[in-house]
Image (tube, rainbow, N blue to C red; front, side):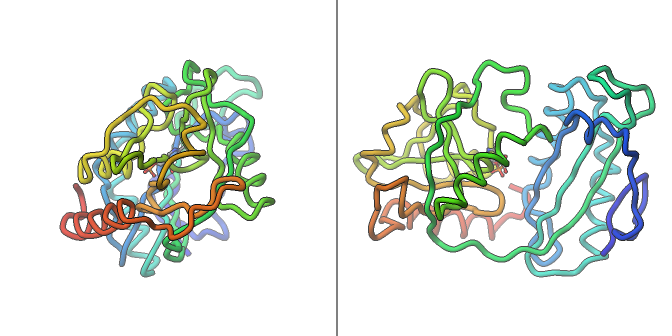
Length: 273
Ligand SMILES: Cc1ncc(COP(=O)(O)O)c(C=O)c1O
């Protein structure tokens, strides 16, 4: 396997970043996960736009998007596979042991991992921990993801693949690595970005392509929604058949099934929507 580091392709086995990299020591970094289908990245322009937004939010210098594009192209070409998770990581680079940043420049890594197609439906849990809709990192895709690690581990313990968070005022927010949608009286709703969720790229496309509304929703809407689904780069649109102890038999329901179809068609038509 080859990855991109320090401006070129390197062997995964021997590529090294500093043990003092600020991404490692304090989580001072940002990332993107891009779906690569038969070596072609999907929605790369939107991912690169968000990478820049996350860098600015964190106070990192703008990433060199020409280099990131070259890196993505080189990495997918060097590692052929049918479905890949292309991971762009950009950190504050070699830095002091505390939270101050160093002046050695940033680190860019682009790596690719093979992945399988997700099942059409899955189980989720809710967790007692909150998303902070008013934090310094809200809405940024940073490498400070340990809260998601903890919540996802809890989900796995309960036989689920995703954990859903409410925010500090009890409103529905998002999952550890996905956005959430609910169907109420035949209409699709998803929490607004003001809930503290990431502005997911799949979420934005699903809103555009299905006419879903952005609605401030209580967390307990999950107890009564007719259908629930998730969106993310690697899930696309994925139905939910259980939320905690509540079964949603027959998932994907009709509205979700249609959203899945529309997403598949539209994303097949245009690789960089
Ligand atoms: C916290 C969080 N919310 C939502 C998403 C979904 O975003 P996207 O559709 O851009 O993958 C992700 C990304 O994986 C995420 O990490």
